[in-house]
Image (tube, rainbow, N blue to C red; front, side):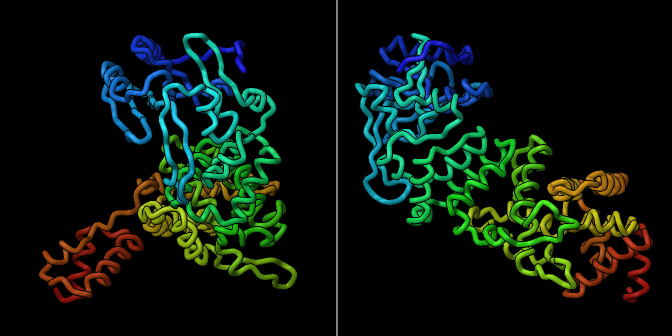
Length: 463
């Protein structure tokens, strides 16, 4: 099927590359996300080009080297990458893929220069990702009616037999529906659910799952859409920490919106409004909100007709680490999230208690206050309470105090350190920790300067 109603605007340098490829007898076709996104009016900086009528990767590489440094992803896949300014270009030989063994790498890849576009497109997952664009003819190649599915906001797989070969496609379905506000086709939903029930998702490396979650969080206006699909497909059985939030009741005075699951999804939708344009930071803030109430199922009780979840912040640390360890091995990433979970109530607690500067200083030692305030704000507004103005007041109060002392981004710096104790004549020992804590308490509670602290230490420790 060919559509002539629209063209794609591409970078000038890509036009030059395509012309050069054409001059050596290649037929380059734009494919995948850049074509799909053009219909959704989403700007693209990543372009995938599938090359037909030529089977020599070396010949293509020679052409591409005129424009910049070329990297080879792998001869078995026949893929070359080229980065020019802010644009990333992937060039791949037309190929077919066949599942030959279990695991995400168990595919036999065969490059064929004389493949038709329709044949080559069968290896793709969804119809909206199978649309091609012939730059020279200004034609869209749409053998599986992907454009019609886009118009109908439907995510539909291409072929039953090939779709179920890669269980990662279940997570891809989830994040696509969330990012592009799509409905999952009934048959596609059933195939995804079948793979979940057959435990085929267990073969996926955690790094690949993490990448799909990353796209869901960072590219969705409402990440909750994706998480509801995760629940509907039964994927939460792989993440019991999240599954336990479903049906966990909350006190209606503070959470009229419903159970902890509903509240959590509302908070991640709020977080989508507060993104900072720092992807790494945004991602750990999203995860902090996803995990912030994981302790509630462990302590929720009804006492005298009221539902309470005392100490759920600290009790949430263990399930947070357990959940995050299932999707990443990056300890520093997890270490960013845990203190935000453990202290997510602190901004409100300090504000309501009209706490002193000392308390703000101590909080800065536990976590990044700027980050904590974003988490607190999303947590507070991620519910259906009527008086949401209090959310901004509490956060503004804490930020103002912390910024005045220049401790909102980095915690209070101890002015007395181990080397100072050594200069006083002390030898390194187990006592150092207690002495330094005492020195820090003097700095915070008494507002002593360094000289005053050292004098106090000399008096107390006979130095």
